[in-house]
Amino acid sequence: MKGGYVDRYSSGTLFPVVLIVGMNVLDTLFTIMILELKGLELNPVVQAVMTAHGDNFWIWKFFIVSIPLTLLCLHSKFRPVKTVLVCICMVYIAVVAYEITLMIRQ
Image (tube, rainbow, N blue to C red):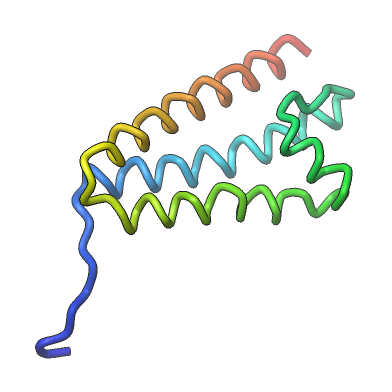
């Protein structure tokens, strides 16, 4: 499209966003696996969604993460946003590593 405008994001924005989405998917899968092993959900927000929506909690969890992530992406020109994205990545990496540790110990 000649003369059209498309939002383009730097790799410094795109990589953390894709990593967060991927870690969210892993977190959800690992949560399901841990719950099947009689584990507990420690996140009170996710626990409330699980209580309200049962097995479909993963749909809500995806939107709970994706909507704010989209807003951060749209505001990625602001300097603090990249720092926030990196911090979210680090938290997700820690959570997924913790879940892997729990499953290995089972």
